[in-house]
Image 1 (cartoon, rainbow, N blue to C red):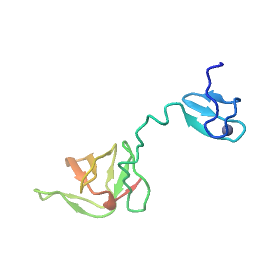
Image 2 (image 1 turned 30 degrees about the vertical axis):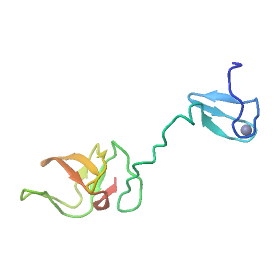
Image 3 (image 1 turned 90 degrees about the vertical axis):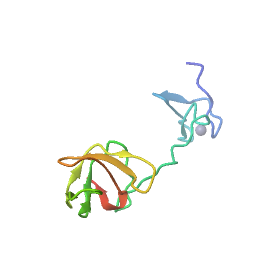
Image 4 (image 1 turned 60 degrees about the horizontal axis):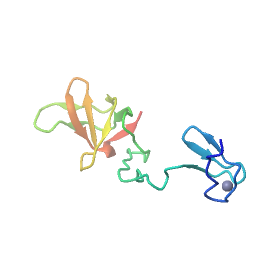
Length: 113
Ligand SMILES: [Zn+2]
């Protein structure tokens, strides 16, 4: 493998590849080849009530009773919501609640399960 790039930090030629990652044994720098081309995935950082960062597919627990807009239904505190999807907006979690159906939640009223 003579096509490995030099370390982007110290210029070492002893880099090796681990999957998509390049690793420099000399300065421990790790990077991916298309690092510069990637759009940083920092546009949407959504945190739960405890400040933990939430991700698509996470399971969260509701920490307070939440009325469902336009109905008499309430999502009870302690309700587990699986497979959330993060979206932008005031209500930043798109999900499906058992027994209620698709709805949107505010991340400040959930915590990561
Ligand atoms: Zn290096």
